Image (tube, rainbow, N blue to C red):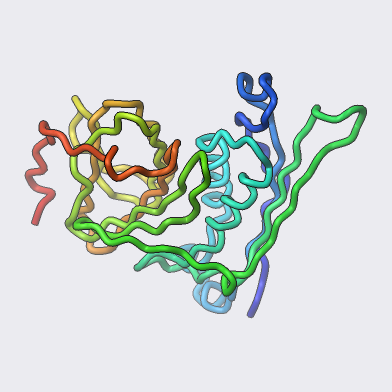
Amino acid sequence: MDARICVDDLEVSCLIGCLDAERRVEQTVKVDLWVELDITRPALTDSLDRTWNYAAIADQMDFILRSGQFWLLESACRVLLRWLLVPPADGEGRPAATAAGVSITKFGVLPGRAKPRLTVSGRAADETFQRETNPWGTVDVIEETDRLGLYRLDVAPRHGIPHHVHRRMLEHEMVLTDGIVGWHDGTEPTPLAAGTRRDWPHNLPHGYWNPLDRVASILCLDRPRFDPTDEVVVSGAPALAGLRP
């Protein structure tokens, strides 16, 4: 049974635009989106874990727009659309999207009551996503532009992203899987809830460990886009006693 999950009138306060004033002060934009999918299994099981959680979708859109600080609606819409169309991570219960659409409306930038809006749509069958393999798991490259990169970090069971810093990139992360353990310099490793956001300034050591029996995912936005030479592993990782097998 094909259906559309829609989120309408989502308001996000973010830096977006090319004008000097738009780069200094956040403005509110309106996001409308839809995702097309087969709802047969969630309809029969009545299980939220087997469908798309629209509250999580809204939270992820907010995270991407706030963290991305986009210049153009074109870039913002494309990145959001690509995120909606990426296949589920290993172990996720939700069905893959077959198609999706995103619209962003800005306010107060045209005379009178006029409002600019950009709308994009696409089908999953027309998109390809690069997957990179690391010692701790895989990285799905959602989109890379001249200014940023959006990635899904899929951490394998009982593996971890090492204690590391970034000297040039500003990294923003949102936990997608309940129970992954995270830390930064000076803190103890702590299980994190899905939806937890972390903004990493330069030179602050941080890392993750997945104690679960399934892949644990993190949504990561880097500005500028990821540079492997700027992923610098450092000493001082906290003890993970009781978390490692």
